[in-house]
Length: 496
Image 1: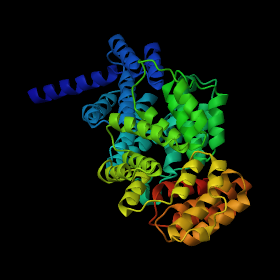
Image 2: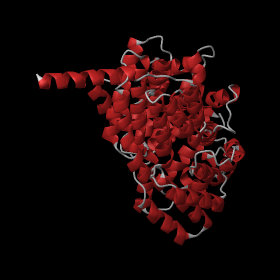
Image 3: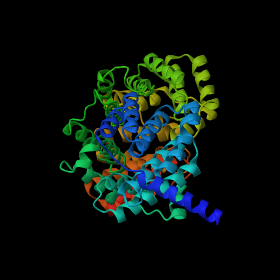
Image 4: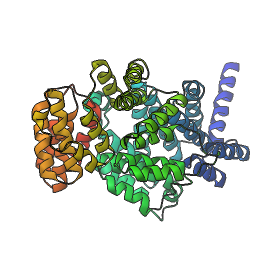
């Protein structure tokens, strides 16, 4: 009898604990969320503390704190911070599960925390854990969308996860198959697009910063609408001065769209106040800006500043590769070899770029200087300078097969950027014929570029043919990322 009484008391206590937990996205929480989405994280934490004092049973501050930990770990990858902050993810999940399941925020908040956890696990090379967390995030938001179809914040998470799930590369298909994840790039992006452009919806208005951030990246990388993505930033008048998340996004996308000058202006004009989250990512971006201009010493200085402050592993090998290139182009082979040795011994191989850098370093061969300069200038969008370097050259100008491959790919890429599409395709075909069984990425990338040209022209049948050709090539650099882009292209052409 005593046991039954004790058990009953415990059950009743648990019930009342759950019943008292609420989701109040009140004014203080809204202010905290906006500060966090500007990367003014200390200001956000102060407001979270205030919200907790106002109502200790409010669960929204729990999720907002998770945003802070996510940004700190995702951008800076500090192992000491990981050790301190990562266990809090599980603590917050337990807290959130004390909330009322009758609220649309219950599974929405759980999905958000699991998504953050998945992204952090990717950064710290916990692939299996990341996959499990992604699946859980997807399950929760899918469940919430079904239970609360009019709860519009669902659109942001569900659409993003659905779009990303639709691009899982060949090497990770087991994840989708194991968990029954069926994504759709078209439906997913359309869902996010609707939310990002919903000017009358109060939730869309509150979450507009996060929605714009996600939408621009999805549009840029999955829809291959690079110019449109950057135009969206301008049309929406996103604050790239006082919002560091937008500043990072705009600079990063501009750089990847070969708009180096625009990227530099954004970085240099951002608000330099100490209230913003401190991250060395700005040195990382500036390093590439100077590299693409062949300002090798400035690039070295930026990259070394980044490496000195950065505690993680993402792109470390890639950066040491770029430092080795700079010293090589300067003629300082002692330093170039030292940087290449660091490329081998430091960092990790989570990203395709790091894997490619390691393979190049281990190969021990140094690229033809003219081809390397043309590659760097082309990557920065300086195509006239790049084509001038290659003027008068042909396949027969190079005796090494790898150099012949790179030459044809590079001339194709430059013509592609200059919108000389027929010439571009001709050189890309030569690159494919030379390199489709080699380990360099040029042949696979050439197939991808041909596919995108046909897609632009509206010839979806030919586009799909070359997207599939890209996927069919194996054992080359950047395999996962190129496959992912090819899958996105096929999905666009088929409307999936």
